[in-house]
Length: 69
Image 1 (cartoon, rainbow, N blue to C red):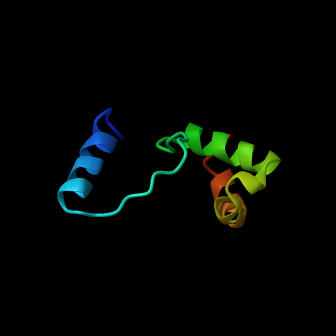
Image 2 (tube, helix red, strand yellow):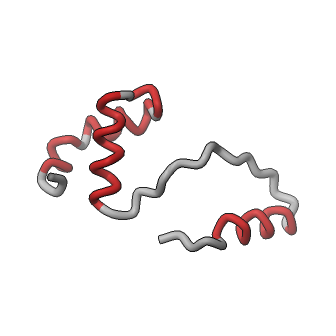
């Protein structure tokens, strides 16, 4: 799981090593099954929010059904 300092530390290392970084809009982490269930529900109603992820979750739906409520 992330800590409050991961982003700051990662950006500092990238600057130090002259690595170009692009930041995406903030979204939530998927760390637990409940997080995955939330994402799956959101993408069912709006697959355009993360199209590749929606396709991947759709292809795994039968497997995920064994673990998600």
